[in-house]
Image (cartoon, rainbow, N blue to C red; front, top):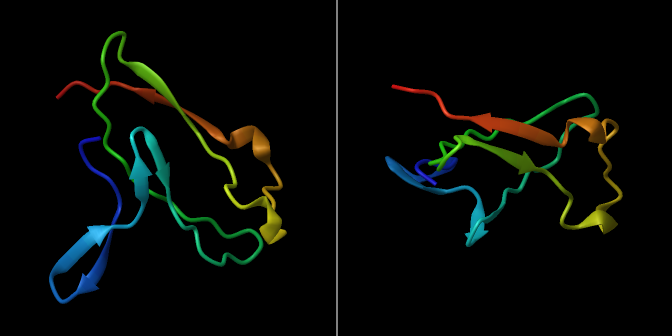
Length: 82
């Protein structure tokens, strides 16, 4: 991981927004209104062949929240030169 989402914790001080253990990152989405979304930007270091994947899942399914379109819970990661 080269860069992960951060949040302002004090004036001019930032801390990681997501907690992690090895390759698993857990990011609190917070309360979202229906139809709303939240974006987290990561910069990854990939080995060959320069592709990977990202998988999203609810770590606390008891919350009653659900994703109305689970087909988009994966994202392809590609290496960008430069």
